Image (cartoon, rainbow, N blue to C red; front, side):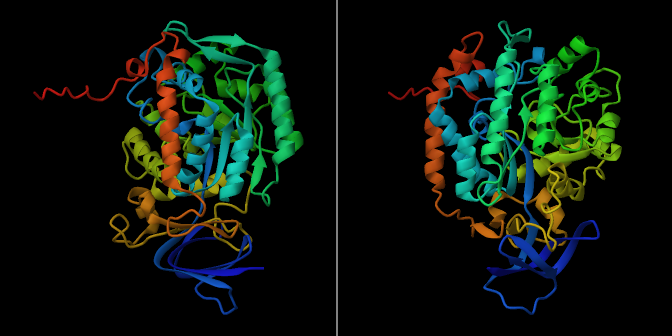
Length: 480
């Protein structure tokens, strides 16, 4: 048994069902668990981490990420979005990017993601993709807590003219994919001292048949694991589902018995009753009544001018709304900030989507979505997943309310030390065994291989510069 005492000038502790601000506090950790929280401790300890002047918080629970792809969104998908597809990049940019990537690129993206997540506050991540074995090994190596799911679907979307979204169906492939996903959970759930967990994740509401979703629902129940699904994430998807079923995606999922407290919907942003869908329905009431959770990844939409309507309204309706990164940058620091700011703009009110609201969503909300009362809080019995932040820095000073500073001012450099399962996985911004410069070099090389191949996956065979023009034209050297 290893007993470690952490001292901090500000501790975001858990008491009486919610977060509390403990000044000049100590937290004692034995092995992987917190055993004491208070103003002092008289027992013997093996190590003391002195966080005088610093802020100690629970780690962030990131409920939706694509680690094998997202880092390669950078320098490609920004500032672009076809109006024909409701500004979404799902139907042109992502297929082109995915087709242009090789396996080494995916491995480089996963390795890069691990460092990026840790250095920006994620201690638990839900990863959705198709390269789960690599994610498991990398997460196990670095010490990250990861829920890993293998995506599957009955069909895929495509466009052959840039005007319409079509679907190519292969229901047998979807059924086989679910079988593989179930085997993956059985093979990997509980690995690395329990830090790796599995979940079931059919890919998208519009690419899965009712039969496949019903089987996925049953499998998650039988396995006792979470169930995740991309839902209401684009205008074309919303319109396609209403065309097929005469119901919104949320209404249809409720009718077929898919929803429940173990369900995490990413992104549930184009809802009946909202202006983007322009379709009368009360999806928020259905979500709240079912207990389903929403993984809100603000940046992937905000960068294209799309906003949830609104984070405060979801919370007021009783929907457990969590925070996620989804795409690059995979920074929960940025995710909290943009969630708060965009919600205020949408509601034209400053006193909604407060720092407290988004911090709770990133900690207690994420833990609730996973059915975990031992994550997202600093309390005796909870897992020792902890973040130690600078309290005196160019961005954190002056410090009176640590939550407001973390949400509205903190930068990645302010996160100094990270513990997961009681183990120090980052100390003074150093992650043992990882060469961040080498990770960046590998990712750059992967991108350099990918960009020339973009035409292979684009319906119009456009080059990367045609699909995503450079911000400025090249410099013309006219010397001599």
